[in-house]
Structures are given as C-alpha cells and as structure tokens.
Image 1 (cartoon, rainbow, N blue to C red):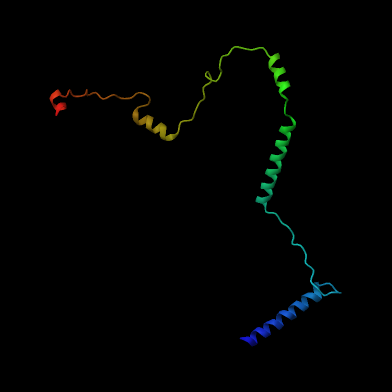
Image 2 (image 1 turned 90 degrees about the vertical axis):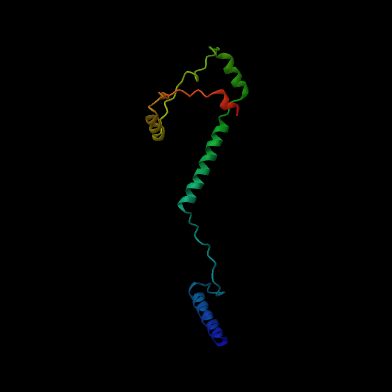
Length: 129
C-alpha cells in the first residue's frame, strides 16, 4: 500500500507541474486563483427583482405622503353629506359551490318539506318514570 501511495504522489506532482506550465505565472510558476463566474438562477433573479420593486414602491409611497395639515384643510373644505352607509345597501352575488347546489336540490331548494306526521302525544306517566 505504501508503494501505491508514493506512486500516486508522483502522479499528482507531475499533473500539478503540467498545470503550472500551462496556466501558471511564468516567473513564480504558481497557479493563478481566478474568481468563479457568478451565475444567478432564474428563481433567485426573480426574487431579487421582486425585492427591488417592492423597495421602489415603498420609497414612492413615502415620497408622496401628505402632511396632516393638508388633510385637515381638505376635510374642512368638503361639505358633510348625509351619514347613510352605502355598505349596507350593496349586495354581492356569490357563486354557489356544486356541493351547496346538490344539497339544495336534495332538500328541494329553499322550501323545506315538513314531516306530515305530528309528534305522538306521550302520556304523562311515561315521563315520570
């Protein structure tokens, strides 16, 4: 095993010498450490762009802030209208899910079928026991 280790050391030294001749500095014969090219994945690039855009929007909002004096002046100039709430009058059409539609069909829509039989009158003695 020791013989193989020595042979492997020589092989590594020879390959290092060849690399130094080709890529190394001619005076010092040392290999140059080149920085690796920085490639950014598409996902990372999108994430960075989102962050940048968000910061720009926040900066715009901060730049367009209105002082409290301007708000007070605007409130004073606008006459007060009736205090009716429009939110109570507005109705929203909501889509009904297929499950809800199926349940309504089974029940017969909004009309509920009441049982035709009346509750049997139970004698008072049965309850006392």
